[in-house]
Picture 1 (cartoon, helix red, strand yellow):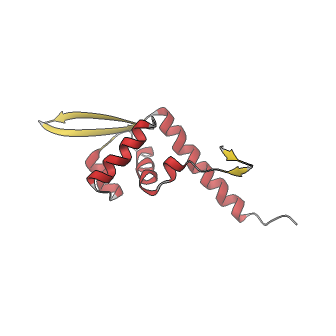
Picture 2: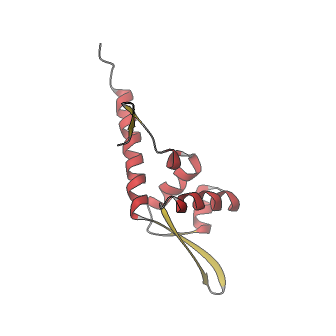
Picture 3: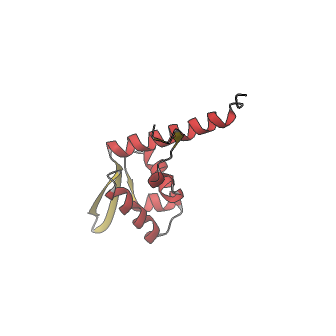
Amino acid sequence: MPEHNGELALDKLIHEPARLAIMTVMSSVQTADFVFLQRTTGLTNGNLSSHLTKLEEAGLVRIEKRFVRKKPNTNVELTPVGKERIALHWDQLERLKKLSETPPEN
């Protein structure tokens, strides 16, 4: 778990709310198309596209553009690194939650 100066550090790339929504949806499906992600996250076309580009550049998602029945279709899949990073992120959040529930030692 990444720590900075003994403190728990969250993955800033993933923790951004829109990207966290995308990564959370993607962690529960094998693949998703752009329209499905847009509907489930509530993001605009441009916003979703921008965040997917950042996640792709970081190696967390794989994007495949193709045609289905002569219509453009963008398909997204988590990479193994993406699966690992989102799982680690949720573990970090759970650890923070547990730490906040533990009474301080005197």
